[in-house]
Every structure is written in structure tokens, then in C-alpha cells.
Image (tube, rainbow, N blue to C red; front, side, top):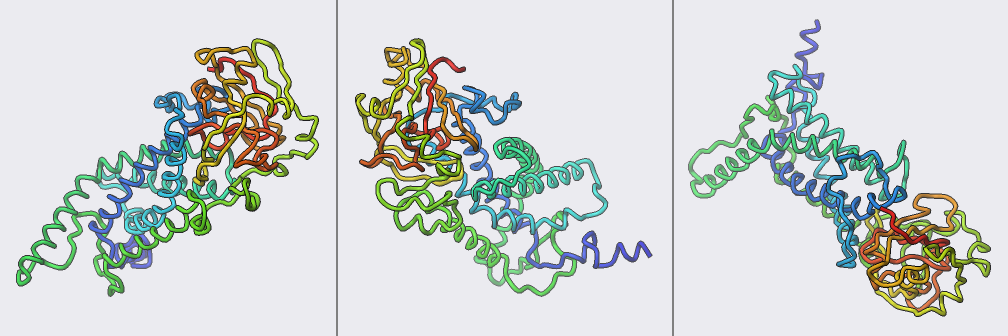
Length: 435
């Protein structure tokens, strides 16, 4: 009875259960090549995104303090070009979302292998099955947590940064192993398919066969159902779905009408409205617990350094030499603005007031916010960021005072830095060597 049940077509482990005529080495190979290029790009841009936080600079920036050797690649994040983080994170999120249909199609194309019995017929096959299981689990985990973060839905059992960081390394280990095991067969499959297609074009009367050879992959059904869609049609469907997601995501990196096409992108806590302050936000003043009295006449900025603490009102800051810089805001969720025209006091001038005179002596700085709740209430900036002539304690934007949700009475703006390091509602700046 058990043998009959095992051999029936009602169980996923049975070869006759999966009857789609579309599955086969060629479709899986094409999808695999697309994912090979796309996931490599995602991994590189993801590592760069983490490096942009300067996690080795200060514990307040480091979301994975126990990373150990996994942080071997970290380096001092530059300030040029000023759109570097905007480009990096825009690619990371936009390409990641556009790859979702390809990932799902790839998983669908190999699903018979997940249920194949016995689990392994050889050590090599056991290794491939293990890499496939880790690849599927890791891939779904990375894409799901990434999409939730993009949508500002923090439904994680811990820090998104930590989960996504370690998940990426597990996933990439399985990905590299899987590529090493399967790439030779993928190349052979695509080459042979190309030869077959060439023979059909050049020798239409010659029989080259229409059925796709299985090559021991276990993907080709032993008794396929009638096709309702060609393999090329399936690829067109997957590609069209990716283009649709691209069209409804990429607009978050542009202003004007294109931003309204970014249906899949996060849109922050509320509509920022129009006018000089009418560009996207994530955190609102009310959302982080800031009351109007906190930013009123009693507000003071405290500068801490070799000269002790110096407290400055907004009027005193406005009386200091004012400078302007055109810089974007770019966030980890993938959205960014075009260059906004910021005006305020250079960070290196504030360092001089705190006791660090001379451009070569400007140190790191720890910036603390008035916000009472939420992540990144404080952030550290490296000395190269503080010394850049475009790095400002901004008091105005696009010719108008900052709005409360954009950080009034004062906020940080630094070229090429992630949005969360451009601290809003600044209360204190402590200059000194941090790391």
C-alpha cells in the first residue's frame, strides 16, 4: 500500500506530479543567468550600503557589533561624488524589487527537485540539494525582509539591519556554492540550445528534435501536460512583470511626475506638501515625540570640544557665516530626492568654535537629536565628512526655514551619506576622535 501511494501521481515526490511542459534545463538556466548577474549586483550594493554607515566609527552607527570578520571590507565612506549613496541604494532597492518575478519563476522551475526522493544519490547531489535548500530559504528571507523594510513595515523579530546583513552572508554562501555546482551545466545547456536553434534556422529540413533533453536534472516531466504557453512566452511574462515593478518603483529616485509612478515605494508618514519644503520625508516630528516647545525659543545647540560646552541659539547660528550646498537626501528604503539647496553653517566652522582650528585638525563628531523614540537618535560622522566644505548644519532649505518635519530648528546634511546620518532636530554635537 505504501509503495503504491509513493508511486502515485498524487504526491509531490512522484515524477508524474509535476506535469508542466515548461520546466526544463533551458528555462532554469536562462533564469539562473539573470539571477547570477542581478544578485551579484544586490550583494555588492548591499555591502556598500552598510559601509556607508561607517559602522567601525562608533557603536551608534554599528548595527552588527558582533560581525567579526564579516566586516573585513569596511572602509572610510567618501563624500564624492555627492550622489554616491543615492545611486547605490537606488540600484539596490529598484533592482531587487524588479528581480522578484525572476526569483519566483526560478523557484517554480526547480520545485520538483525540492521534493525528489531519495534526498541524495551521491555526495555531490547531497551538496547540491543542501545548497538549493539554503538558497531558497535565504533568498525568500532576504527579499521578504527587504520588501518589508522598503514599505516601512518593521515586522521583524529584531533589527532589520542585523537580520538582513547576516541573512545576506548565509544566502551568498549558498549562492556561490550553488553557482559552482551548476554553472558548468548551465553553460552547456545554453550552448547546446543555441546550437539546436542555429541548426533549425540554417537546416529547416533537418530533424534536430523538439523535446528538450533532461540531462539528469529531474526537471522535465515524464508525461507533460498539453502546453498553454511556450517557454519564450513564459520568459516574456516574467520579463514583463519585472518591467512593471521597475516602472512602479524607479520613480522614487526622481522628482516631478515620475515620483507619482512609484506606487511600490514608501511615502513616509505624511504628504510633505508643496513649496520649498515639499520633498519626501520618513520621520515626522510628531512621530518621534518632538513637541513644538522643544524647538521653540528655548532651543539651544550644544557644541562640545576642547573648549568645553558652548550653547548657541538659532539666532546666533544665523549670525555665523552662512554657506550653501546642493545635496540630495537618499534613504536606505531606496527613495531619494534631487539636489535640494541647503543653507547653514559649515560643520568644520562649528568644529573650530569647539576648539579644533585648522582644516587638518577637524575631528569626527557625534550628533545627537531631540527625538525621543525611534532609531538613529544619534549618529557619528567621520572627519572627512566633517571637513567637506559642503557638509552643513542646515538652517534653511530652498530659500526657506526648515519645516518641523525636515528638522527645524537645525539638521545635518552631508554629501553621499545615508539619510539617517543626516540627523534632524540636532541638540548636541560632540567633536573628537571616535574611532
